[in-house]
Image 1 (cartoon, protein in one colour):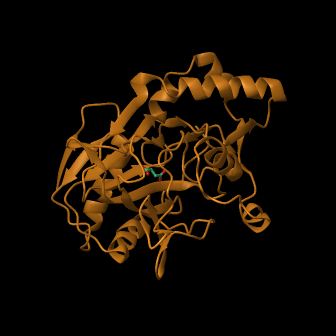
Image 2 (spheres, rainbow, N blue to C red):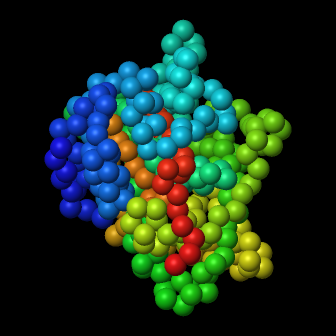
Length: 292
Ligand code: SIN
């Protein structure tokens, strides 16, 4: 198993590991350590069934079954299909070309530890891959905050709402996803998490707020909460914290969700096909801390 850093603020490649086969606890530890240090890890040249993707992902924690309860691999609801392909008039997956910045599952009581995505079809134009996934480094964003702000916000909490991102995708990104039903909203009521978390594998502090789901800093008056969130959303996307991942077919891309936020780039059209299978790993094995 060889680990090569991207040389940028995030990103590494791990070669020499077949994710379709069982692997040792030592190898697992090395992947987890690399994830903490580099945030985003690429495993090139993989060939996986949906079952193998789910089994690999489940080594890192319990897998989430998305509340939307759709676009799932038949018989394996933990594997969600992201795709703009339409077969016999029916979309084969959740067909959003592009997104906005967010952290998966910050809206859940048990937050996400990691995402595992398997790139089966990647759109290309002129030989150049499209539909990159972009990341921003929340260890660096915390470190870069003014000291006074770190002190003032310490111990505060942020309210995260699943419906904020879902509605934004429908309103602003032309997503065909239907509005959430009453039952879906009840299943995922807004939840609060500390604004700063101790990362479960690095032990360092991260900024845990994201434009996709964060709606309110609970301990501040409404106006001040709005202004502070606006500042944080701009701060956390400074160019020096950013990393863009350009897909190749057969890549498995794994990122940890506590120290990064991400967004998918919408630079491909409906006939430029993208097919990705995704598992979301909950922070059941690797739980963030709150105390210094
Ligand atoms: C995701 O947010 O999990 C999907 C990102 C992508 O489609 O690149």
